[in-house]
Image 1: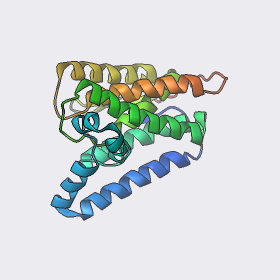
Image 2: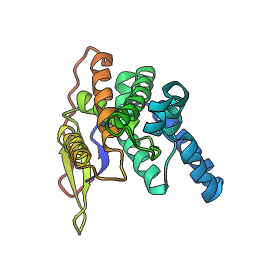
Image 3: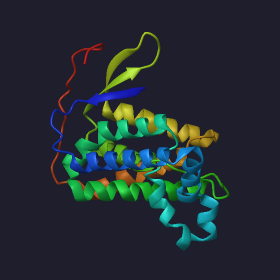
Image 4: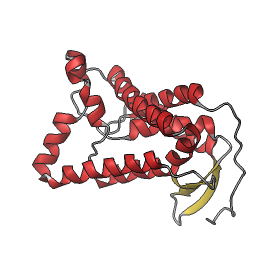
Length: 224
C-alpha cells in the first residue's frame, strides 16, 4: 500500500518539513556528484555501523546524525521523502516547529540505537531518514487516528482506497515487526520500530492539550 494524501485540508506552512526534505535531497545530490566510488565512501564513513558503535560509542555517536541524511539510491530517497511529505506537515502543524524537529531527530537517534541493540554485531552501514520518519508516523498515529489516508493498492489495475490513518499506520508498523522478527535482510526493520516508538512516546508528552478529530474526507473508493 502506498499513501497518496491525507484528509487534513490545512497543514500550515510546514517549513521544517520542507527544510528537512531540501536538506536530504541536497545531501543525496552531493553523494551522487562524487561518482560511484565516492558515493560508497560516504556511505561507509558516515553511515551508522552497530559493531563500530559498541566498540567506541563516544567516537561513533556522530554517525547517528550523519546517517539520517544519507540515502542509498533514488528509490530510497524518493520513498522516504514522499512519506515525510504526506505525514510530516500535519504533525508539524500540531506540535509546532520546535517540538516537531525534536521528535524527528530523537526518533532518528532512537531508531539507530534500536537497530544496534537487535543487531549488535552488524558491520553493514545503516543509512536513511526512515527511522526519523517512522517517528513522524508514530506522532501522526497518536495525533490523527481518525484522519483518512488515500492509498494506492498495488494489484493491477491499481485501485485507490481511503483508509483510516489508524489502520494504515497500524498495518505499516505490524509489517515492520513481522519482517524484523523474520530477519529479512536489506532493510533496518527494527530501526523503524524504534523510531515509531520514540515518536509516539515523545508526542504523547509534547501534544497540545486539545482534542482533534479529522472529518472523514473522501470522494469514493476510486477518486481523489
